[in-house]
Length: 135
Image (cartoon, rainbow, N blue to C red; front, side):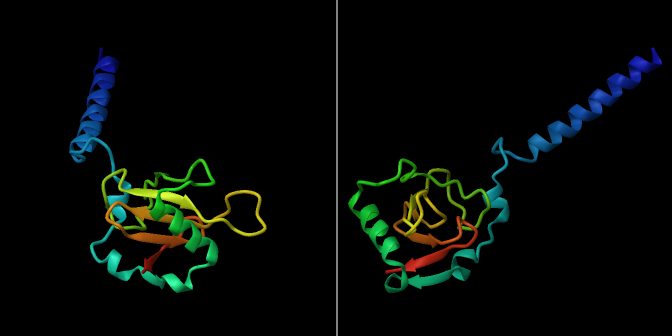
């Protein structure tokens, strides 16, 4: 009987700990981007003038603005911002687009991420860093 009591007590402790974890997150799921985001982040992102973008990025940006057609199937899909390197926004706010890299047969590392608010971000290192595109 004592062994059963210990097992029940242990399970209750686990359930209580789990319930506390879930209750601490009222949205029902951790939003890692929100946890990593700080309010001043958008002001601290490096800015890049449109003129300083590589020609392929300028071409991708013009395709985005005209609504395509896009050369890669993943273009226009949701960018989750899981690492929180861009300002926190609701899921679906950001879309990603490939910037062709000359000499590569695959998508490469360069991307433009477009926000629903009309802002554009350039990454040349597969989302490790972003620069806000100034038009």
